[in-house]
Amino acid sequence: MLIRQFSLILLLAKRFARSLRADGFARFTTIVSILSVALGSVALIIAISVLHGYEEKIEETAMRFTSHIEAKPIVGDIVGRATGAMSVLRRIEGVRNVDMVLNREALARTRAGVDGIVLSGVTSMRASQFISPMVIQGSGVTTSGAVIGESLAKTLKVDIDDTLVVYAANANASQPILFTTRVGGILRSGMATYDNSVVVLPIETVRQKLRLDDDVASSILVTCTDITQVRGIASRVRDVLGPRAFVQTYLDTFQAIAAWIDLQKKPIPIVLGLISIVAVFTVISTLLIAVVEKTRSIAILMAIGMTPWRIMLIFLIRSVTIGALGSSIGAGMALAFLWIQSTWHVIRLDGAIYYVSELPVSFSVAPFIIVPAISIGLCVIVAIVPMVLASRISPSRALRFS
Image (cartoon, rainbow, N blue to C red; front, side, top):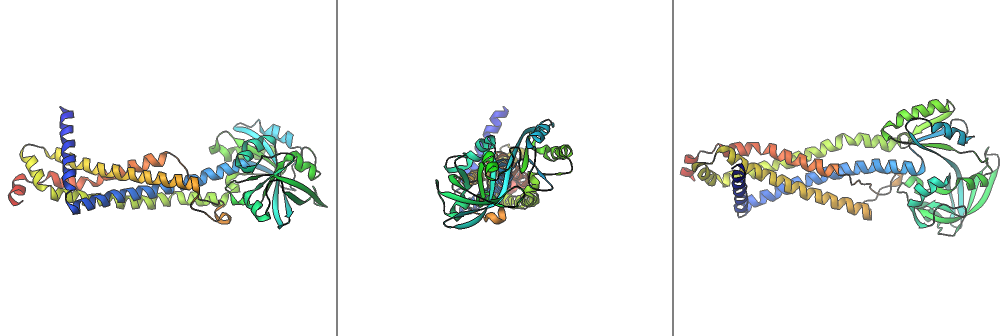
């Protein structure tokens, strides 16, 4: 019985919607309402996806070139007996992996000119897991060739198998060191800081070229099992290594952009949420027009025995339909934008200011569920006034003056 009644109400709602399409003004307001809900959903989904994209990009880049936690010496730029320190850090609860890297500032010279570089010596594990996936041309990190950043390669006008002349300093910076290396690969990280300057070699090669001991590094890199506990684990690393170690998390390394993301997380959803709320309120005008246009039909239905609650349900279904259609269109438009940006990087950014050269986006499922659900919920709320007005129509008065 209940299913029959609902089927009847659904049929009447469809008939109402079909007959309203014949009215030009009612059709126009319906289209405006659907587009308003769609645009509000698009704005909110894209904003949330961009903020999540920035977070994911920072974490991804931190894992490639630094780590969740990085420990450096306060005095000097070399960590001695790095292997022993790594063994101690592996015993800390919450630590998944410990690695090391040897970074030194240097100059690179080609026929096109001279530019500052960061000479980065990495272990074979880091080279295979993090550096190789970023290589867009050539091979990965090998003893016979370096992998350099894409922007740096353009600046120095070098290609695969070209030669770089590197000027660096020894451990105590007392004398210059000159050596050459072949360009074996070109990488693209998406972070302008690294693409403009990094030259990656095996850590053993960097030690040999710079005449350093076999067990030295510039930083010890700690990867956590739970990224939400990174600050607590960093504190324990600081306790283990003592006061001579400078320990910082990837959030400290990218402090400026991380602070900007935290600042935007609160106002942007609120501001764009208000846009969605204003858009949803256009549904009220659409429903009120439907009530006016269908006053005679409502009166006839009530005269033959339909209850006010069922009349209200007819307009509730229409409101939910508008909200669902609008939010679905909005989610589809947002998904298309995110896919286009992720594939072709249409929107470019100044890497010197925003850290990344193109707008990062995230394909997180949550915004595509939460935003349409909120939009439909708001459509239900704003439908209350038209529903009440429709249920209070007097059949005798409406039929007499229609």
